[in-house]
Image (cartoon, rainbow, N blue to C red; front, side, top):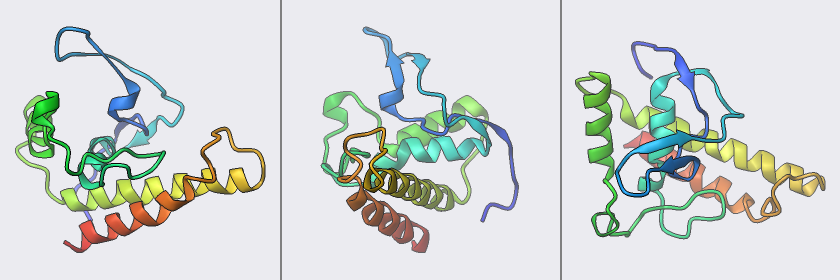
Length: 150
């Protein structure tokens, strides 16, 4: 658990798929899909955005993993670069307890996906992939456990 606590506006679903990017420059022009926004720890959004670095390709309909992808060939930063850029932009020297935040993000994702699955079973899922998402629960929660165990 982190020793110090912080509170900021948390997006709640901060990921590449919810960003509009400039067509020619490495610039985020907008962040979309704010219905999960709340007050929370700023590192929760960062960890959520970094989950794909810890998941295999083809992980499932709710999370696309970068495992095994040549990120440089696609012009994407790896997790260490993302964390370094974040620290530089926010004035942080480092991110202690990073594994806690990653584990939290993965367990949170598992809970959300299980809720989508339950709504699909009840016949009122907003996402047609709800039944298929059930497999993601075990994958994300297991990966979260592995990360926090170190």
